[in-house]
Image (cartoon, rainbow over all chains, first blue to last red; front, side):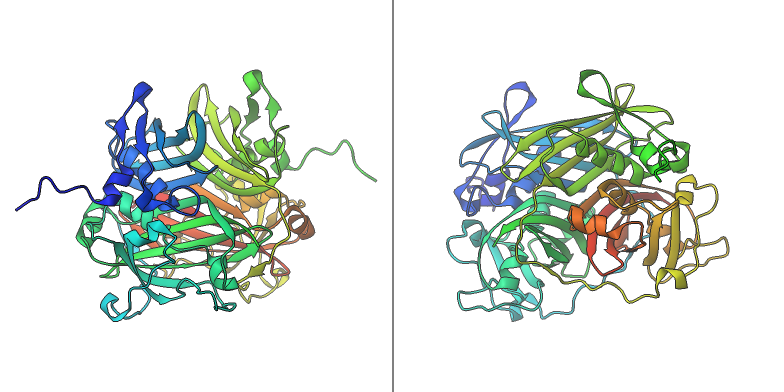
Length: 273
Length: 273
C-alpha cells in the first residue's frame, strides 16, 4: 500500500525547486541539512543537479559537475538559474548560478550526456572492508545537523573527538546511506560526494574554520547502475594530497556494494588554523 | 645581454590576449599548439588563466580552475570574457567564456586567492624515478603539433606505437618541460596538467576519437614555489579510475624536481571506440 499522504523524504524536500519568474527556479534551505554556516555543501550540489534533471531541455544524464562555493547561503529562499551553453549531438554543457536577493552565492558548470556502449573497465578496486552491519554507526557531533540525515559507518578515520591527537594520514573510509533510507539517484550521489568532513580536522585532531570552495563530481555510473544501488549502503573513501598555505584538496571515491565505482570526486578546501 | 628583439616564446604567443571591445580580450590560435581538432586543450586552459592573470581587478594567484570544452575551437581569432562573480576578503570567484563569432566553445570557473601561512604538509610522495637526463626524450607522433613544444621523457606508459597491444594499466609517468625551455608560471603549469594523452589509447594500444570535456586544476604551489622551478623539468603522472560507456576520468599530479607537489588535476574525457 502506498502512503500517498506521507511527507517527502527530507532530502527531496531540501532539493525541491519550483518554477519562478524569468525562468528561474525557487528553492528553500532546510534546517535538516544545515551546516555550521549555511546549508551542507553536498545538498547545494544536489540542488543544482536537480535543477538540470527537471529542466525541459535536458539531454541525457549527469556526467560531470563542478560547484564553486563563492559565498555563504543564508537560511531561507534562493533562486537557481540553469542555462544551456551548448547542446552537442550526444552531450550538453550547462552554467548554473544560485543567488539570494540577486547576490550570487554559488556557481556551477555541468555536463549531461547520453551514454553509449563502449569498451569499459574499472582499474580501481574497491577497498577490502568489513560489511556495513559489521561496522558501528557513528555520527558527527550533534551540532552538525546535516550529518543526522546520513547513516555513517566509519571503517577508518572517524570524526576526531576532543581528545584526538594528530593523525598520520588524511584517509577516511565509511559506509554511508541516507537516513531514513532512500533510493540512490544522481542528486543523492552528488551530495554523498561531500560527506567527508574536512581532512585537516583528521590530521590535526581538532576542528577549525574550513569550507569547500570548489567541488567536482565525475558520475561514472549510468542511471541503471545507480538505480541498482537502491537503498543500500555506498562505500566512500577520501584523502588529501597536499595541505598548503590556507588550502588543501580532497579526492573521494564512491562504490556500490557490488564494487561498481559510482563516482569520483575532488574538492579544494579553504582552512584557517 | 637581453635580446630585446627576440621573438616571444611560442607559449607566450599562444596565450597572448589583447584588449578588445566591451571588455573582451582577443586571442588567436597558433599552429604551434594545434591538436587533431583545434588547439591543444592545455593551451586553452592556460589562455583562460592568463585572462585572469592580466585582469586589473584580480585578487591573488590561481587556486583552482575548471575548464569545460563545450565545442571545437576553430583556427583563428577568439574572444575571452572574464567576469568577477564575487570578491571575498582573501579570494575571488571568476566565470570565463571563450567564444568565436559569438558561439561559446569553452566555459570555465576559477578561484584566485591570497595565500596565508598555515600548517602545511604533503601526504603524497613523489614517485621514485630516474632523473630526466637518464630518460630518453620521446615525443608524440609528428602530426600532433603541440607535443613538439614539450620535451617529454616518459618513465612509463609512453604513447603506444602501431604495434602496441593492450596495456594492463593506464598510468603514464614522465618528465616534462617546455621546448624551448621557459620559466614555469601559472599558465604553463595549467597547460602541463593536460600533457597526458587520453589514457584509453594506452590501455587499448591504439588511437581512437577522444577529447577532454572537463578539466580541473588545483594549484597547490604558490607563486614563489612555481618560480623556483625555473626552466627545470617537472614530473607528471596520470591514471584513470574507470572507463565506462563513452567517458573516462584521468587524475594527474605534477611535482617539481625537489618533490614539491605543484598541482593536482582531474579531467573527464569522451571517447568512441
